Length: 537
Image 1 (cartoon, rainbow, N blue to C red):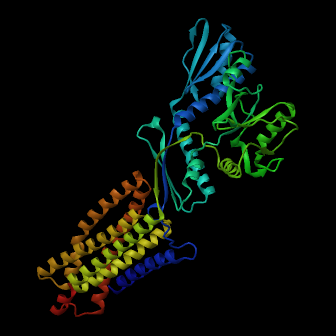
Image 2 (image 1 turned 45 degrees about the vertical axis):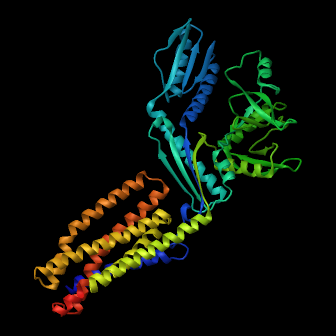
Image 3 (image 1 turned 180 degrees about the vertical axis):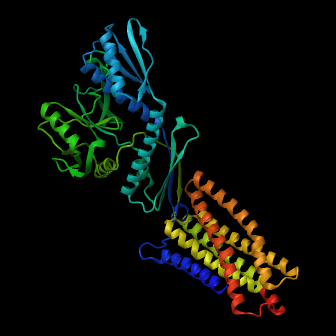
């Protein structure tokens, strides 16, 4: 018995010391970082529409295939994207051309599949469709990239302890939702602008001079827009009424370099001292940029951001791995653009579904009321068990205090935030811990009423209450796991505290409380006396 008590006591002491160490470790302990509902800030719910990303990726594949078909000398060939499909039309009955196209698709475009080509007015027409597994993988990768780059942008904004979670939509076609909580954020409009922009940067070859309208560009091109070209606008100023004035550029679709090939971007200055963005390219992109600018001096190199022209300089000299992006930028716009480029472009534009702003005053009020509720709940629970269960009530209080230390220690180790639902979970955990002790005490009373000794009643009470305690607590843990897996940020906070609290209460009610009784019986052999029984429970 003595050895068993010693082992149990040492184990309890070690667990408590670990919890204390987690709470008060310098720089790594419990900071109780406050979530949005307690600190104030902004919550955004965004939807990632993967359809646009699939269409854009399909268009890029169509461009690659078009270039390769032309390089292979296939005459009268047409390649164009149609949504998430690619149509390849061969205007020649030459069997060699059919073999060439099919060989290109099979060797280099393994993401797509196709049936036998159809004949349309003598042309062979292929319809390339995404393979279902490849399409699913691409959509999942798109959502992961959007979430990761949004996290990068949030880090650049400088919000402490943000919360970003992804939830799949009920329909796979609908993409996914991303819930972003930014505690303490004040400039929400700027943050919203930073999060919604795709920041997809391209350096495209110019294919002519700009015109006042897209119709004028079409006339410049002879009335037909080639498959490898597009017309994009450039903002040049405002008219007398304050309306935006644009001009339109004919551009080739295949980019020389994209923003995804940047090594770094930062705020810089143009030749006139105005705000600009300095960029540095990765090695492979730098080599390609060097070759192109060397071979096309005197031609325009148009810089496009989110399908809008921001600058169209003429290549004056060969450029290697660095340069300047000039435009009509303000200081803030140049800083924002450099930050967006560092964070990475979004392959799919996020759609804002919901926005919730919690003011700091409301958060402080919620925090004070939540803490007061927790203190009052703890005080009432302690008062009840000590008055109703006498000395055994103090046993429950000791277990409850140890329970609180274990919960805070576990939260410190997990770096969990305290939210308003988290405080609710803490209060519920207090109730669950007391409930377990009450079940044990009532079973002990039943055993005493049957005329058993105090020692036998206590041990019998723990054994008979064990099944009920485990059953109720384990089912609650299962509910907490489901809440954590399928809930949003605040619900996850509630679930984490609840699960930690239940595990801690199981340990304290079943193990710690029993050990306290065992120590009591060892220290006070006269526990069988009637007076002691009345004082005990």
